[in-house]
Image (cartoon, rainbow, N blue to C red; front, side, top):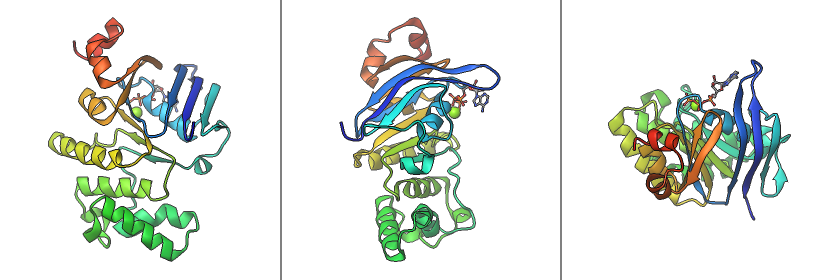
Length: 238
Ligand SMILES: Nc1ncnc2c1ncn2[C@@H]1O[C@H](COP(=O)(O)OP(=O)(O)OP(=O)(O)O)[C@@H](O)[C@H]1O
Ligand SMILES: [Mg+2]
């Protein structure tokens, strides 16, 4: 199937010998909005880093669109990743932040301007293109980070706790803005969070991780109605 992400029996141990991911298998069709929910230390970020190619697994395969990705360097995967702190360039303005990945790809300036403009419109930042990052609110920064990540048309989007540095009220508003934008795109999205509400609002499928294993995978409704075991039940506060 086109642009399908398949993880088969992925395991990861760090140098100190701790087994951080244990036989993770997962299959995501294009357009799936997956939330990865689990307590701190359950292996969520490690899972994203393996998919992104920032780290390698000890065993198992990761494939995308029919191709094995295990040895493919991160920049060749054409996957986008957005982090908690956004990692924007504070000395560059909004336009140049969004254009950054396109310049790295060697795109010509006319096409860069077109693509950045599309991104500015999509994220409602048309009037901010010459603003510096340190003159933006947290919510505006988040939209710049999203625009920058989406500009090179990644085949897969990963977000690692994209809202956790914001206060509660803003978090709620931005979550709905973010899911609105993403729901209009047919891009597979993996959204990592340790917040149940966020996970259920952002994903049409959710995996619950605990100590490097998938405890359960299902729709938000299935997880709420039929938690598979006691741990999931307690974790979801039932
Ligand atoms: N580079 C590393 N070297 C050794 N251990 C690591 C490394 N990175 C992560 N770990 C360990 O792997 C486990 C999983 O970490 P990971 O960052 O994937 O968890 P997480 O689910 O993202 O947690 P959080 O919600 O706190 O971000 C933790 O016990 C962590 O200490
Ligand atoms: Mg993490």
